[in-house]
Amino acid sequence: MKAFSIALALAASIPAAWSAPIGIAGGTTSVELDPATAAILTGALTITPLGTGTLVGLTATFPITGGFIDPVTGMAQIEHVGSGLGFSDGTDTLDLTDFLIDVDLVAVTGILSGQAALNGAALGSVPLFDIGPGLVLTLRSEAAAALTQVFGVPDFTGAVIGVATTSPTTVPEPATWAALGGALTALAWMRRRAA
Image 1 (cartoon, helix red, strand yellow):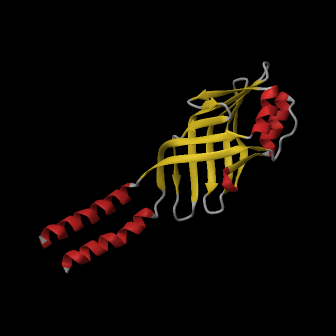
Image 2 (cartoon, one colour):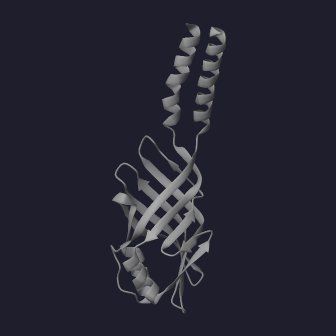
Image 3 (spheres, one colour):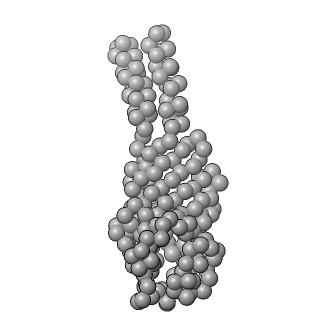
């Protein structure tokens, strides 16, 4: 009976451990660009992947480098350090890198921001896209204004840029490993004792 009580106590501690934010260690985020918007942009600009980002056809892919998911609040931040996209008209270059997805997983809304640099001069963090249901990315007014100012393209505020697919790899927190290890040890001890 004492072994059962220990196992029950350990099992009761597992949900508390799981309520801690869960780290993100890797994975990828892909964006399938909207064909109509991409056609307009590529008609005026050359778009190139930067760092570890890739661009194949209308799919841009960025490695996930970190972040967290909070199972209690439903909030998540997903980092993409070292990758991005460059936009050039042959005279000016606007680089957008180090994307950060800040999303409410319950409401399925959020913002995707990134570091901006114009012709190599850092401009800082800029909110780029609103994230809506279905992970649809729409261009925010700040990003649209920058594209218009730098490249003279039409104002794309609110235009659908594409649909994101995020596949993060999570890392259990130490408390989760400890609780799980303790529960497995108790179960093994109970099983051995019963034999």
